[in-house]
Length: 229
Image (cartoon, rainbow, N blue to C red):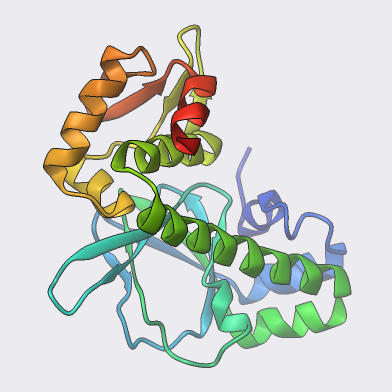
């Protein structure tokens, strides 16, 4: 089956209930973009004038401090929408976004998306819910950075990634996202060395396995206990 732009738009759960005529409007104004691994999607200060959908691949959204330290905020994968803050704010991006691997995106101009949203109250509610959910996720991340140990933060991260990137097999949940220890450190606000020691401890305790850059969650209940410790 040939997968059109409209087909990919319909896969997003936020948009799946839109009337067919509105789907056709979004398909007509959308564009497809092919990005190689590590290609920039936007940089800090760039206009926030597009809504993005991941067709294939993985997108990373992050911030870089004045000292050059990177903090990863989100990883996004197939059928997920991002750039949603442009709906509630006209300010430029204060984050950076890049293709974490070879990625295909759909983009819709913000103004066109907002016209559809204003005609469909349900879509407006879902977009506000998305903004709230992602803000809550970041607030939980900040709380974790301030008050939890590196081991607890790492357990929380593996549980979080098990949702969008998790694939179950006979051993447990494979997190289908290749991350170096340095990249994991940028997600939980720790050093690479601390992450390496924490992963060794989790492997020893039977909570996880590692295969190259992939993590396999063996004991979700154990990770939840560690997260709350």
